Amino acid sequence: MINPKEGATASTGLPWGDAERAAWRSRQRKHRSYASDVLQALDRVGEPFQVETYGEVVYGDERYPLRAVRSRQWRAGLPGVLITGGVHGYETSGVHGALRFLEERAQGLEAQVNWLVVPCVSPWAYERIHRWNSDAVDPNRSFREPSPSQEAAALMRLVQRYQSQFLAHIDLHETTDSDETEFRPALAARDGLAFEPGSIPDGFYLVDDAQHPQPAFQQAIIEAVERVTHIAPPDAKGELIGSPMVSRGVIHYDFKKLGLCAGITGARYTTTTEVYPDSPRATPEQCIQAQVAAVVAAIGFVVGHTPS
Image (cartoon, rainbow, N blue to C red):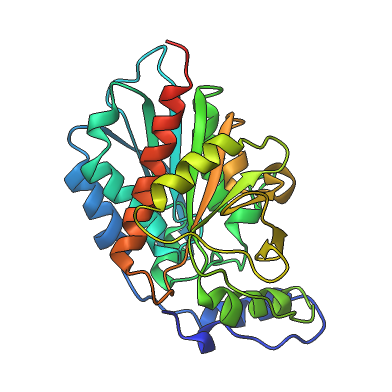
């Protein structure tokens, strides 16, 4: 887990300027390698599929190629499914869940759906185990035009090439203890606000689109994931991370209004997964398997609800 001192900054009551962002950036350190963990993994799994470079993230002298993998044969008449991970680079099981799906399950589903997988949307943040990109911008609040995030802008350009071919989008995330100890305090400091403590749900949950909810789709995923890891119960207010739990393990966000990744396709079936890797009841492997189970269940639901 990231050292809190690398990102923690007390709020001055004023939003950050260039100097504060530069000071924050100077404290960030690499903890792992995007090239080794992601690009080399895609080299291994890519042969049966179609691997493409859809853009590049550039910060100073650091350059990160952005890779996507899709069904080798994109068949007319099959539903399209987008799977994204690593929009927040520190959410490890999202990245490795997407890679595991490619390694173990993707090939067997090519006859049922056209799928596109983007395992790591934010490589700079992946290496530093951080939520933000190098500009102290949260990519998962930046899926709007014009986007302040290189990562979000590149993914939006990729999705535009597929126009309206996606029936579903599964965006793989985690909620971690560092959200409360590190990233929310840093957000308050960046924006010149007072930090208001919250709580972290113990278990897996989903975020559905408040404007286009699909409760049956969400519950199909919850039921599948429950066979792998536990589902988060509501807090004393009946909430998860400050939002009412609308059904077991499900809350609502307005995807478009908030600029969330899960809102970029306009697909009918969309969800954001949230795994809790810091739970004493879950292992890193369970978290990866939970992400894979969510993807497979989502695809199964889509296939079962697509007219033949």
